Amino acid sequence: MNKKRILVPFDFTAAAESAAIVASSIALMSEMEITLIHVLGHDSESEADAQLSEMSKKITASSSAVCNYKIVKGKLFSEITNEANDQVYKLMVIGSHGYKGIKEMFQGADILKLVKSIPVPVLVIQEGYEFPPEGIKTILMPASSHDEFYKKIEAVVFLGRLFNSEVHVYTVEKPGFTWSETMKLNIEKAIREFEAKGIKYKRVNESQTAYSPGYSKQILQYAKKINAGMIAVMSVPTSEYYYIADSDKERLLTNDLRIPVFAVSDTDRV
Image 1 (cartoon, rainbow, N blue to C red):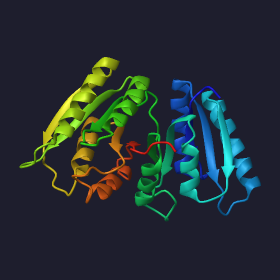
Image 2: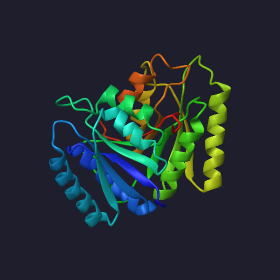
Image 3: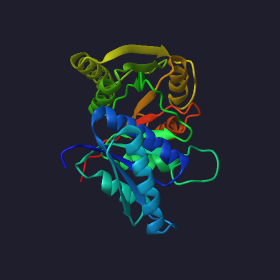
Image 4: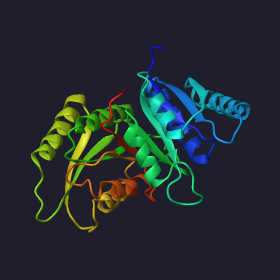
């Protein structure tokens, strides 16, 4: 198998279908293929096979993207993580049900726990999201002091080139707080890489105006202001913010604006 693939966990919900539609658009533009994966629960294998076959044909008919599927048995998180470790995958797209409605599999802390374990970038799509015909034109990329920040830079370059996006390299200036040298170096690395790869970008530094334990509130305010098509984050915490990072990231992943979140972990394939 020569072409890289996009992995899409599929549980027959509206959120999963939204994720599959987004994946098909990315697959068509990048000449990648799609694999739908379903982890059997209370449904029978024959029922799952029939529905997956129908969805696979629907994706191929609507986008011309090659779409296959597989059915596995086991624990949901471990089976998806195991599959994502296959070298053939470059990206995962997953639907999330946010915090609203009946308790589903992929909510808040659950989706964060999953994306932390996935070795490829994960695009999280909320139920009800509609992929714009023009694609993702603006990517909001908050800077951070992660040692593995280069992985987020690489992921953003991939989608930025695909959609001809403009990337906003974003920071919040907090009174009395000094950025670490790693943070400064990460910003410089991002700018150098965007310039080298021809990615349009803006460097944005705002004074803190939204007071909360983390920066998610102000990030979302800025995302709304610029009509961001995506927010790119590291799914793992930094040493400075480990005590508040998870709640901050959950807020971004389940945002009421339904902005897709591109989550990159520091996990390597096993």
